[in-house]
Amino acid sequence: MSAQAAALIAHAGFWLLLVYGWFWDEIGPRGIAVFVGLWLAGLFGLRFGPYGAALFPSFVAVLDIVLVFTIFKGDVPLT
Image 1 (tube, rainbow, N blue to C red):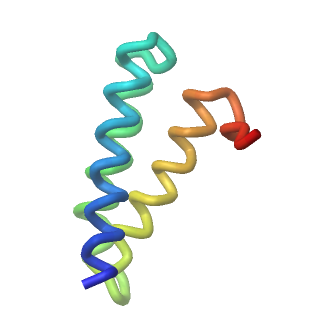
Image 2 (cartoon, rainbow, N blue to C red):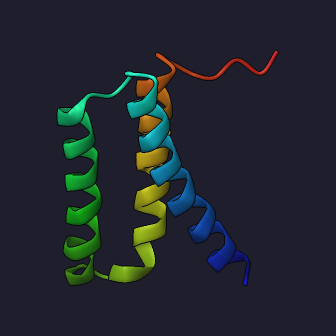
Protein backbone atom coordinates (compact mmCIF):
# COMPACT_ATOMS: atom_id res chain seq x y z
CA MET A 1 0.00 0.00 0.00
CA SER A 2 2.77 2.48 0.81
CA ALA A 3 4.47 1.92 -2.55
CA GLN A 4 1.22 2.75 -4.30
CA ALA A 5 0.85 5.91 -2.22
CA ALA A 6 4.42 6.95 -3.04
CA ALA A 7 3.79 6.36 -6.75
CA LEU A 8 0.61 8.43 -6.59
CA ILE A 9 2.43 11.28 -4.81
CA ALA A 10 5.26 11.18 -7.37
CA HIS A 11 2.84 11.33 -10.31
CA ALA A 12 0.68 14.05 -8.78
CA GLY A 13 3.81 16.04 -7.93
CA PHE A 14 5.10 15.70 -11.48
CA TRP A 15 1.96 17.09 -13.09
CA LEU A 16 1.50 19.79 -10.44
CA LEU A 17 5.11 20.93 -10.85
CA LEU A 18 4.65 21.12 -14.63
CA VAL A 19 1.56 23.31 -14.21
CA TYR A 20 3.27 25.45 -11.56
CA GLY A 21 6.35 25.94 -13.76
CA TRP A 22 4.20 26.85 -16.75
CA PHE A 23 1.97 29.22 -14.75
CA TRP A 24 4.90 31.17 -13.28
CA ASP A 25 6.85 31.13 -16.60
CA GLU A 26 9.69 29.06 -15.17
CA ILE A 27 9.26 26.38 -17.84
CA GLY A 28 8.36 27.19 -21.42
CA PRO A 29 6.54 25.02 -23.93
CA ARG A 30 9.80 23.39 -25.04
CA GLY A 31 10.69 22.49 -21.45
CA ILE A 32 7.25 21.03 -20.86
CA ALA A 33 7.57 19.01 -24.06
CA VAL A 34 10.96 17.69 -22.91
CA PHE A 35 9.65 16.62 -19.51
CA VAL A 36 6.49 15.03 -20.95
CA GLY A 37 8.67 13.29 -23.57
CA LEU A 38 10.93 11.93 -20.84
CA TRP A 39 7.87 10.81 -18.88
CA LEU A 40 6.49 9.00 -21.96
CA ALA A 41 9.90 7.48 -22.71
CA GLY A 42 10.03 6.11 -19.17
CA LEU A 43 6.45 4.87 -19.35
CA PHE A 44 7.05 2.87 -22.52
CA GLY A 45 10.81 2.24 -22.37
CA LEU A 46 11.14 0.88 -18.85
CA ARG A 47 8.78 -1.98 -19.65
CA PHE A 48 11.51 -3.68 -21.66
CA GLY A 49 14.12 -3.71 -18.88
CA PRO A 50 14.41 -5.90 -15.83
CA TYR A 51 11.80 -4.99 -13.19
CA GLY A 52 10.36 -2.73 -15.90
CA ALA A 53 7.11 -1.19 -14.76
CA ALA A 54 8.11 -1.36 -11.08
CA LEU A 55 10.86 1.22 -11.74
CA PHE A 56 8.54 3.77 -13.34
CA PRO A 57 7.46 5.49 -10.07
CA SER A 58 11.13 5.90 -9.12
CA PHE A 59 11.82 7.35 -12.56
CA VAL A 60 8.98 9.85 -12.08
CA ALA A 61 10.38 10.77 -8.65
CA VAL A 62 13.73 11.60 -10.27
CA LEU A 63 11.90 13.75 -12.82
CA ASP A 64 10.21 15.52 -9.89
CA ILE A 65 13.61 16.31 -8.38
CA VAL A 66 14.88 17.70 -11.68
CA LEU A 67 11.71 19.78 -12.02
CA VAL A 68 12.20 21.25 -8.55
CA PHE A 69 15.80 22.18 -9.42
CA THR A 70 14.65 23.68 -12.72
CA ILE A 71 11.70 25.66 -11.37
CA PHE A 72 13.24 26.93 -8.14
CA LYS A 73 16.75 27.42 -9.60
CA GLY A 74 18.27 24.98 -7.12
CA ASP A 75 17.10 23.39 -3.94
CA VAL A 76 14.09 24.70 -2.02
CA PRO A 77 15.28 26.44 1.17
CA LEU A 78 13.79 24.89 4.30
CA THR A 79 14.67 27.72 6.68
